[in-house]
Each structure stands twice: as structure tokens, then as C-alpha cells.
Figure 1 (tube, helix red, strand yellow):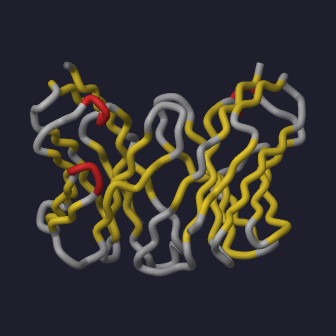
Figure 2: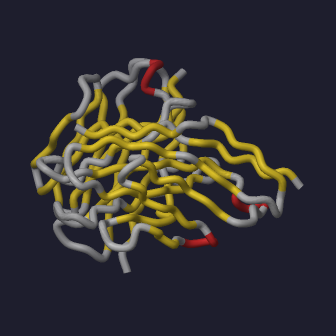
Length: 114
Length: 115
């Protein structure tokens, strides 16, 4: 069966510090991968998605970036965090583009920027 | 283009009474529709999905939803609420085309269940 991992589970960082969040998927090959941010009372915002190694699409302009160095690894980064980067970050995966395109979510990372 | 509107940001029910969470969507293509549930500080769990088969879709934990194309709605129901149903619920649409699996999420409905 497929599983998705995220770490760390929680993170407290000062403004201006770098960020690296990691997501890995097990039990599937060539998944589509997604990073979402969930801010309090604002639903889910898609940040990045990837259909393959090295292929990253950005949905919103921001000081975050994403990379996919391996097929089942997706990394969210920032060189300098802002207060507005605080939130709950969720990684998700799905099979390739198709009609039955549900996404499966990881447990999330709670990021607090002080 | 696609969008989804959850008509209630909060719903409060008593344990044992029915649950109705409302969702309307718009889509340029025949959509796939989903309901997800999120418990506090947890990831999202898929409750059910509609993918153009039966319009009445049954999901986990006794939930079901009915796709009504004429009303562009996909409301989530449950006959009898349990305390464990208290969570946030998201209605989600995917309408293919060139979306490559990009889902559009509603703003969420927080369900409170009173004893």
C-alpha cells in the first residue's frame, strides 16, 4: 500500500531563517506531487505541483520554492522566511492525470515563524 | 475554469441528528467531485468521490453525497451524527482539461457535534 511521509511535524523558525520541508511517498511510482499551505480560516492554497523529476509548476508568486530531486521526494524550501509563511503545510500525491484524480495527503507540518 | 463554494462556514448539530453540508460547484468540463475530512492538526482524508457513475455516492463513516447537475450541487449528508464526526470538511472539484490533477478546494465547513 502507498504511504506518504512529511517531516518535521512541527517547526518554529525565526523570520529571515531558511526552510526545508520534506515529503516522501512509498509504494507507488511516478506520482504527481503537490504542496499546499493551509492558513487559519483560509482553506487550502496550492503552492506547487510536479508531474515528474525536476518538473515544478508554481501556482502563486512567493518566497518559497520546490524541488523534486527523486521520483518520490518533494522538498519545499525558502531562503528567508516571512511571518506570513506561518501555516500548516500539506504534501499530497496522486496518480497521473486522469479522471479519477483523488489526492492522498500527508500528515502535515505546522510551521510557526516568529 | 472551476470553482467550488461551501455555503456554510460552520454547522452545528446534536449527536444523533442528521448532518447536511452544502456545496455548489462550477466547471467547464464534466467534473470529478470529492469530499475530504480534516481533524485538527491532521492531514486530509478522502470521504467519498463522484466520477460520473452513480449520482448518489456512498463514502466512509456513513456519509453520502448526491451529485445534482441541474443544481450544480454536491451536498454531503449523514443520517445520524456522531461525536467523532466533529471536524472540518472540504468539498473539492477537478474538471480535467489541462488541469493535470489540480484540485480546487472549497473554504471548508467546520462541523460541531453537541452531546
